[in-house]
Image: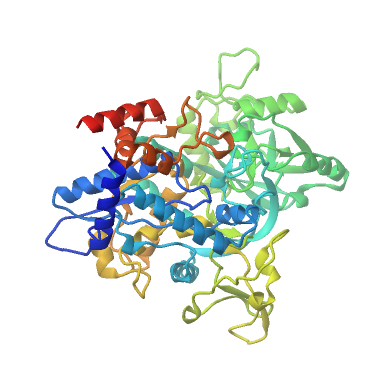
Length: 621
């Protein structure tokens, strides 16, 4: 049977009659089906993409046949580092590169027979789209949800830009797995995602999402309950967070992060040379690496005053403390923490046992609870009771307080690259950071820039050199662009009416949202999926939305591997292209084979012998 001719006939008919074009219909129950939109690379779609979109297409068609009014759109995540890097590699301008890539993607998707409403297509590199990124940023700035500060940031020397914490995997760039991430001190823009940490956690169990995604988000936010204890160092108070205030009498040293902004103030002249040698030796260390690497440090020359005993304890700089977790310094109790125990053994630091254990000798840290010893008036008190009593004593004497701590950090959105949304701020020496007026949006990317070292936008003086909106003196436009995840944090709202003159059509959003069925990979759990939830809640609080969550049901598709179980990769030469398979076997054979290999949430291997069998089966049918 000539499946290709049949497919071609019906695809032309669908397109001519706009059969999948959707409008609001209050007489019908709605169903908003959505896949995470793709980054359009020069390589086009492979069968892994086709598998993902086939799942969504089957579900959308099923819902239509069940009487639902179905919204099933598609667009393109067309800004950001991947597009810019691919364009530079191809020796093309990103705008030209992306335009060509999108045309190819649309052709491939239509050839696959996917039932998208193409009238709603959007691309995030379009000024008509990213003007609303800028609008949202200004609203966040107005509400105090956007701010700029100097920070130790993750820097990828390959991307030549800053990375968010979520984009550093085992000390490597998420896009360049062999490139070590470095740390730099730079002024950066942040979005205050931590303001919504509690709400992101509170009702997460109510979501119809895979349990592992919910667990990943809980762990990423990482809320801990404990006590903040004030230690004095060189006349300054350093609040230190701990979940074990019952061990405070066992503190024998402190460790400050090697990336801490105030490290220099702790280093004495006698120790400066040794500390400098240590800092040159180490680079950025991710949180995961800290669990694996050998713990190392150097004495700074400073001492901390213990708040309850007034004893002086040495302050070390170490390679295993995060600068942006708590105050970037930890109290160390080697008798009751294995990491501290190993460090103390290595550097011959005193250990003081304060929780009674059965160990005659300290051969390893005792991490459990028990009765306190060597803890003054708290001797004999059980750990659980001692935690409360010691915290109360600290609070009474204004030496500490009960508190919570998050692993979750504010979202760093500055990128020193070209192909992204320009941040709508002008920097004036007299007036400071001046927001661009909403009437001047969009601030469009200039076409003419020079690629190479540094930020390409800084090479276009017509773009950078502008008058200050307040004082009219010479000023400089912000040259950082937004993280590409800003684009994907609200695109599902724009689909409801991509041609609206406002950010989105309120009536359309009220009808279609939240999305009913969202399909995408589990790897987005701690980036896109958290950011989209944050955006929804923040926009709700700005009076723009009336719901709390963007996606009612989340479905993680399984991975389609190449034959033999390897990941499909152009560099390995094992990528299977949909058009090649469709030409040989027909689109229906390819789609049927993809979803019949295994359950759609399970991994499966490509097997051309299997599709040949599917082709023969469909011929018999």
